[in-house]
Image (cartoon, rainbow, N blue to C red; front, side):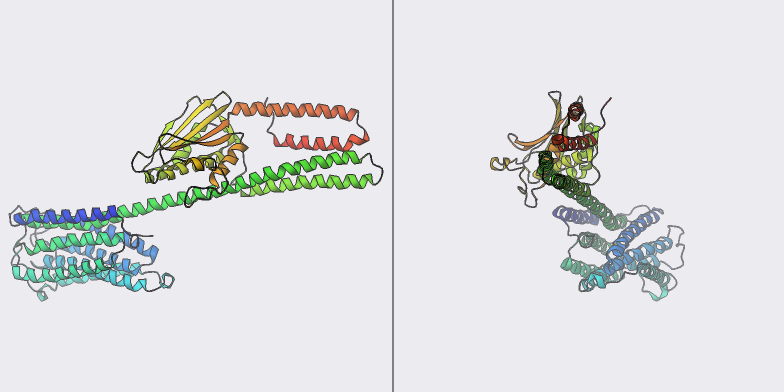
Length: 569
């Protein structure tokens, strides 16, 4: 979505109405003082024109950028109007008497500046009227049927229009009706007639825009039209230049033109922030899906691999018993060994499927859970800001490190934090707060607690919160928490929920510390060493009936040994 098709929210509408009210309030303050004579400031017009020139070029650039992305000829027309008005500021400053020369740098007489200003002011309502007409015409055609708009053609047309008006107001000023008596005093009847035509254009543009208003850009154009309307009303009340009303006129003009530029910049940044937030959410959703696939295949490997391992052991035992039978011993042994090999191959296939869905191969490493919490929180700072959620930390500085797959554990933390943030969406009567605590437990494990001040978990839902496909969210899948628990349990930990008082819920993550894992690995290595010594003894007293059993036990020991990390020194 762009600026021309994103509807304004209530806060933006209120801000626009407040600016309109402020502009008319300034007009009411200036009117009583409009004829107060003030000193001439030669640099005033060049400075004001330079500021408005930069502002209108920036506005046109933003509109052209939107037009090129969304292929909108309506935006090209609108941007061209701003470029033409910006180009007319150059001859306006050069012809203004007293700005760069007593009678202006360009030869045109006392009426040239006024006519350039009038044509310039008429360019805005005309460009808005054309913008509305082109938008209505384009809305009747399919987007795929639209060709790319000609931005170069729009810029060329703006320069050509500005050059034509400049030549007419300077070289052809004799063909234009009089506007000023001298360099300071206006002809009231002439000014009234010319400004009445511009006023009609502003009213027509406002009516058309109000009738078809549907976007943020439309709303801010209406605010600008209100400002330009105040200028026209003030011009109708002025008799001469260099008065309080005349200086106030240009200040109103400056604010009216800059409001569109500032609004476009603010809304563009806001849309960019929303896009970045949406991109981060999609990336997080992709990671969550990958995590889901990883956890699902992990569960399959665990559930299916266990009975298949048992099949392999039972088959090897059958092989050892059948070796003492007389008939077709070799064929029976070969068949049962094939059963065992097939079970092992099936288990390996399931593990390979899991590796296919995983984002990267699972690699356990030693790291600080506190550091992982801070890194994960920084990834979600935009979501926290968007939801106006405060994040508090109570981390144990003496927390021992853990040994786990850092990527998988970060996915678990992201899931828990996102659930906590989403639970606070409907909270309006108390602070929205998420608290993360870490503490060392009994010297063998660490505990991480994620708490929120949301509505909590209903008592009837508490026992099912980790059930597959059970969810309390309208758009939830019921897979996030069960898969998080699966990952945590794979790392030798626990994950459970608890209800807080008076508000909120907590999710508790307990993981073994790194040293405990090392002890367990050393114990496993020691156990395998004892088994190998026992097998060595069996081989010394090996009989024909134990041949198959010894071979299969050695096969299992080799597999476990390969899957373990190297023994610590």
